[in-house]
Length: 247
Image (tube, rainbow, N blue to C red):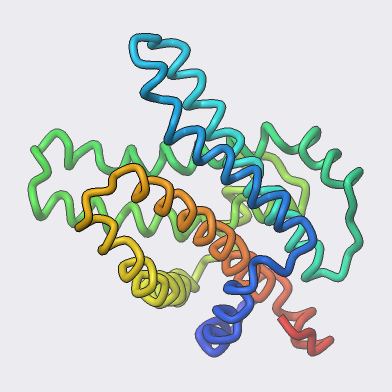
């Protein structure tokens, strides 16, 4: 059973430091290139596909699937590293082959679940109070199931079981996880704002699109690491305390 005291906040700065070093993972260059290609392609090609409704839809869906799956591969490799487990090309291929579809389905399920929370706000014309309640509920849902992909990767469970496991892992820890994510994103907002505001003011839309795509990939990989570190601390708390593992 999880301890009642804080077990995450004391590690915030350490986790931030580890998250920033997203480039240290062995497969980071390959993952980064794939995400860049997928991101830049999604920026450049949509205008070329105007008038091709189905083709545009399929292209957008494929791009999203590639981004979700590639991000999960990075998370898979990082969790393996945190557990001091060896992995290589064959293990990555096996993960994509055996769990790729499960990862995409679980990710989409969480996205749709969060979006569905805002349906009352849409029907009320985004009433301030209703929108605020929906936003709080959406954050709660996201935090509750934030580790679903981690469980698919680490525990080899299906979509439904990954949601159940994440709910159990975050029970009693939602406020702490929220504060961790809040501070993490606030800190990242400062450099991102300093970089994007000049481009926004200059009116260089294409350059701004590329910079935002680049930064979103960096933030994505940092978030994968930050999430994995929280997951390891919560799920393997007893093992970590007993072995004094530096996570």
